[in-house]
Length: 186
Ligand code: HQG
Picture 1 (cartoon, helix red, strand yellow):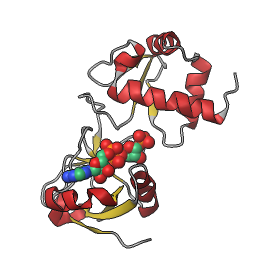
Picture 2 (tube, rainbow, N blue to C red):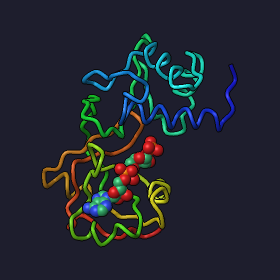
Picture 3 (spheres, rainbow, N blue to C red):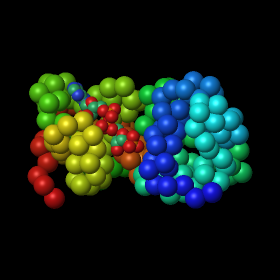
């Protein structure tokens, strides 16, 4: 069945909620690695009053603009690749970061960030992007965007651990203020 783009976006927002933050919203649970049973998820989404079948779900996983979701090999399980607030281990791969990474935030958070550094807030990790333009988009979700440059290379040499998610988001536990500066546009 063909899905309109906006219908697909709405479903994807709900899937993000269920697979990252609140599986109970679809009456399901996730295992320790963040996996949901695909058929249970489909049934749960339908029971919540939304329409979803396997074909639609496959289309969402295949075409999601950020590659947010993955199936296991035989598609019996599905999970979000990153972004969780509930404590699951999605088997993130540790990786050596580039010298500079970027974090998009809103100007109203800047004073607090300057004082406290970047904290994961409600999520498991601080989310970082490899390019400035992605960070602008992330920041715009919260208000007047502000982009911070993170001295990731130096952080890593100082012992910080970084992960690269399946969909290309860089993650780390916390960024001290000493590694942060205001990014120059580019
Ligand atoms: C801010 C989206 C005050 C932080 C995006 C951010 C991303 C502080 C907000 C992913 C702070 C948390 C994650 C401090 C951090 N004081 N504010 N000390 N430390 N903050 O949504 O990074 O579309 O949890 O700057 O593309 O905005 O969902 O994190 O503004 O990859 O797939 O606290 O979500 O992806 O906000 O976004 P969030 P985020 P999806």
